[in-house]
Amino acid sequence: GGHIPGSVNIPSKELPDQLPTLIEQYKQVPELFFHCALSQVRGPKAARRWSEALEYRDSARPLSQKVNILRGGFDEWQRKHKDNKTLVEAYEAEYWSGDY
Image (cartoon, rainbow, N blue to C red; front, side):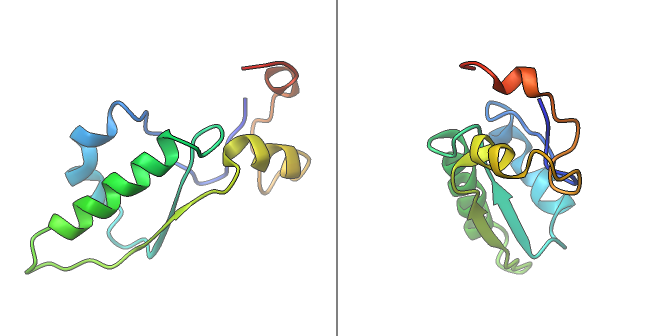
């Protein structure tokens, strides 16, 4: 348990159908970070899908965003920043004590 303040959780299964709406909703955000637990599969795949959707967007409405992948995923983020309330909200230590 826990999350990065200001982050938006979109399950990877739901992303493809929501991409057009999400791109429009977040078009003013200049830089995005994608992640999953370890940022090895789902996070990078979501970042790739987002980047591809930006490329195929209507050329009359170009949009430039920097798309990043959070190295090490949330697992590493929470391990490094769990005690910093400005970087991790609603941290639940018991969630991270075993294998998830």
